[in-house]
Image (cartoon, rainbow, N blue to C red; front, side, top):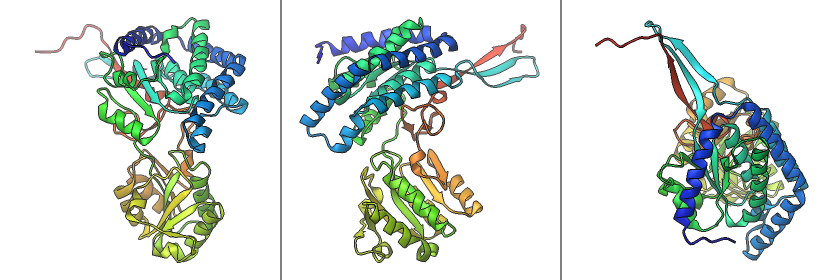
Length: 424
């Protein structure tokens, strides 16, 4: 593994190359970008054996390091997952190009015509951990939205990501676009990430971290450029007194157990005390039957002897495992208050057949994603029709929720006149 001694110089060179590529790509045609995405998919398919061999090397190293099974699963590639990467490229190819689209336009009384138009952010820095599919998703989304990207993956996916980036750059070359629009940091040294967080002398416009809490916390603490990120996915499902029992069971079970280790997994279920006699036991027993550890308040513990006592810390915990905490609350107001106190503003859901209650929850819960009668596991750019995402943002800048093509653009004003001057 390459470990250059002059990391600062190497990273500054990457930043300058990315900036030059971004300036060229900003004027790239939709046809050229779509051709690049098509070519990227072909190159990934043609080098499938190389990608799998590199991934086997990554997995072997991860096992030597004692990585847990859930981590290995996120790292692993197979033919089906490679097909999924190619499919994502095709979906992104077929999405409308946001660059140059007119968001709004109007004319002033003095005849000035003003338009608000989407433009690329510039250079995006992605710092992520184990998932090699993030390499392809991030590269494709940034390129289609007219941005150059600098990819800094973790050491565990270093070999897999390296081959994928070669395929992405080959697609750019084939379409006549600048290869440096997609760059990969050629070292896993932590100092390289530090240089990115410092902005590479103004050559990075935004940082997107994708990984565990410690990674995101470091990025948010050290970054000197804007950050699109969420620190935790402490997601809630509230089961209202007017919920359908079967719907409550199925949605909550899916929200927790489909993939317990993703950021959109429900970590706490809140049950309306007024409907507990009808709703609590079916939900608790279904979770236990599915192999989920349940930690609950006194009422929840009374349902089944296997329920463990919940502590104050449980309401603040993102388990990322088949564990859930359950608590009775005083109606939708109690649920909203609990989410305000303990939530991470990622994704929260209500299950109810009462439209008025649902609208109150959707309106008053201040999370990036708020759902009605749907699993929190739909908190994903692909499920939103974005093709893919490079992360979920919970901040209060222009990107919130899944970060897809539109969120990777900003806007500028184009003002057209006919010789107007402003009076003194």
